[in-house]
Length: 494
Ligand code: BES
Ligand code: MN
Ligand code: ZN
Image (cartoon, rainbow, N blue to C red; front, side, top):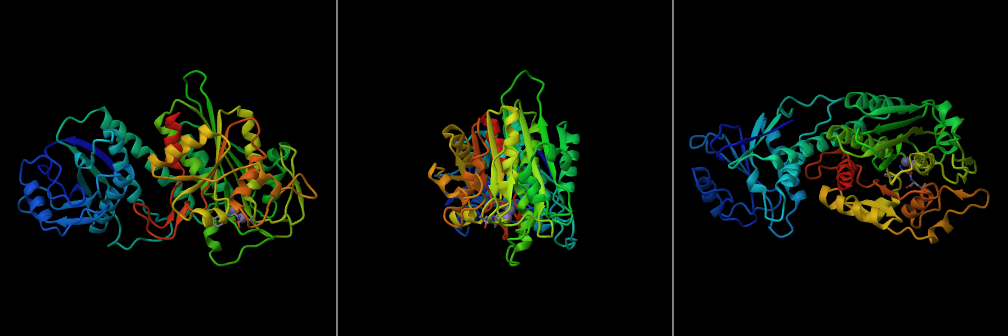
C-alpha cells in the first residue's frame, strides 16, 4: 500500500474516491467553502441521514459534477475525546469499504481529520496506520474470490496548504509501524506445521538481513552449554529443534542505553502432558505472538533508524506430549540456577521466558520488556480490549501506559505485590510453575519476576489481544500484530 501526499484543492483532482472526515452532527464540512464539493456534501449533511458516529460511512456519487468518482464521508464522532485511535478507526473503515468496491486508489482530505489538540504529524501517522492495517489480507493458503480480491494499492493525502516536514514524518512513521505490524500478523497467521521454531528463526534472520540488523540463532547445543534447562525442558517433547533468536539494532552513534525486548515463541501449545481440551486448541498456533511482536518491532526500529540500542530475544519451541516430554512432578534447573517443579506442563511460556529473561542480563539493559500470550486468566480479567501490564518499576509502567494510549494498543496494570511469591513456592524445588486458578495472570508474572534481577522490567500478557476471532475496527480476523505499535511508541518516547 503506497501512501503519497500532494498539495491541491480538495475535490479538484481526479480520483476513484475522495475520503473526508465529518464530525458528529455536523451540518457542513470542516474544509474550506470553495468549489462544488462542500455544497454537494453540505446538502447531504443537512438531510441528517448521516450522524457522523465514529467510522460511520456514507458514499455519495456525483460523477458529473466532480473529478472524484465517489465521495466517502466518514464519521469522526464527537469532538470531545477525539484522538488518534478515532482516526485509525475512521480511515480503517473507509479503506475496508473501498476495498469491497474494488477501487485501486483514493484521495483523502488530511485537514478534515485535524483537530486543535492534535499534532499534524500524529494525525498523518494515525491515518496511514488505519489505512495500512485495514488493507491487510492473509492469502497464503486460500485464494480470495476474484470479486473480493483487494486491488487497492494507493492513498493520496491531499492538502490545500503546503505539505511540510510534519506530514512527511507522520506518514513515514505510520507506514513503517503498520507494515511491521502486518509483518508480525503474517508470522502469527501461518499454521504451526509451517511456522516451526526453525521457520520462525529463518524468517527473523531473513528480515534482519534485509534491514541491517544483527541476527544470531542459538541452537540446542548452545542452549545446553548455557544451562537453559527450562527452555530445553519444554522443547524436549517435540521432534522440532528449539531455536533461541537474537536480533540486535546497533546504531552507529556513540554509547546508547540498551532496551531488551523478549517475546514468547511457542509455535504450537498443545499443553504437553497436561494436554489442553481440543475445543479451540487450533488457536494455540498464535502462542508465538509475543515473538512475532518483537520481530516486527525490530523491523520497524531498523527501518526508522531509531537512535537506541535495542535487542530482541525470542525463545522458540513447541509444547507437545510424547514419550520424551517433561512430566508433572519433574524438576528443571533454569540457567539462573533456580530449580522449578513442573506441576502443569501447560504453564510452559514462563519456563522458556525464564531462560530468556536471565539471558537478557548480559546486556546490562536500562529496561527489559517481555510480551507473551501467557495466561487464560489474563483474558478472564481484561477481556480482549487491553493487554495486562505487570511491573515493579513505576517509571517504566507509566511510560508503557502512555505509549498504549497513544498507539491504540492499551495496557492495564495489575498488581505484583510480594505476597504472590508465596503462591509459587514449592515443597521440592525453589519454585513451581503453576499456582492454580486464583490470580493466575499475576502468579505467572511473579514467576517471571524471579528471573529479572538487576534491571527494570515490565511484562505484558497479550493472551487476550494477540488475535481476534471477529472483525475488530481496522483489524480483521486472525493475528493483530499487537505489541508492535505499542513498543515502537514506547521506544520513541525514550
Ligand atoms: N498459551 C497459554 C495461555 C493462553 C490460553 C493464551 C488461552 C491465550 C488463550 C499458556 O501457555 C497456558 O496454557 N497457560 C495456562 C497456565 C496454567 C496451566 C497455570 C492457562 O492459562 O491455563
Ligand atoms: Mn500452555
Ligand atoms: Zn502457551
